Length: 284
Image 1 (cartoon, rainbow, N blue to C red):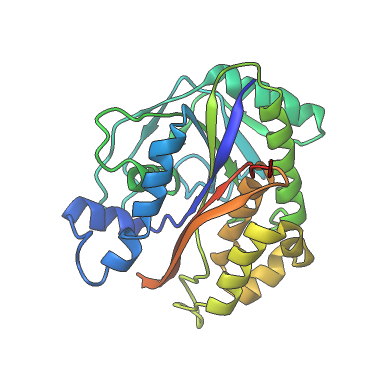
Image 2 (cartoon, rainbow, N blue to C red; image 1 turned 90 degrees about the vertical axis):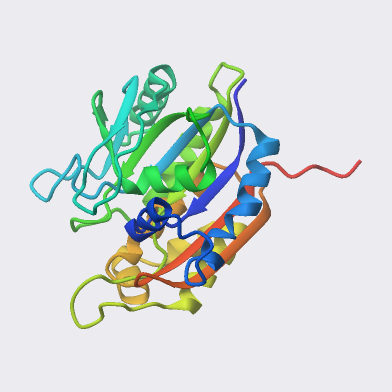
């Protein structure tokens, strides 16, 4: 059966992609953030995943305010990146895994999640930047991807509890996937930030650290908050933590924290990375 290796949680702010394009990884402003991925890449070198299931939020490349699904899953054989207007270079396409995508789609519908199935899907910086951070020198991407988009833009938003339940349903489906695939789960976005209005530039370090601690130790703690609570606590774009919560759900109950990094600010965002291994070895 397939093996879920663990989860990678990472910020995806477009300015990171600009820094990659300009080679600013060692710049004093950027270095504390990029250095956090040394440990992530070391773990990936040992884990050697074949597939990445990525929980993220689309920023208008596929969906806009007139049509915004709560949950959408890609079922394509290939996913291409497109120009979003940030001035970021368009990067090479990603191979999909249609068989696994359809397995997840069928399992989620059976679990009574109403999802949008996308047999053609573009991927934006929310997916591409974390992949670039993890495999910066890749000639060909080493993983096939299954993108799962969560609405963090158009209210009403899904609740943290619903996103955790979504992730757990994905995790159960992955555990039943009849293959030798080695799977890594991504949760991307955030952490706290607000891009507009009187609170533009808002960052709440205490809440960010609470989220990281809870994801590692007690993800159900985060379901005590509503999505509107998160807007108040973490800013209007801080609700991207929903992607992290869903990804955590897919890892099952037993995890071990491998590494974490937290750095502020990147642009006007609290930026972070973390790896949770999905299975904890039992003592002999």
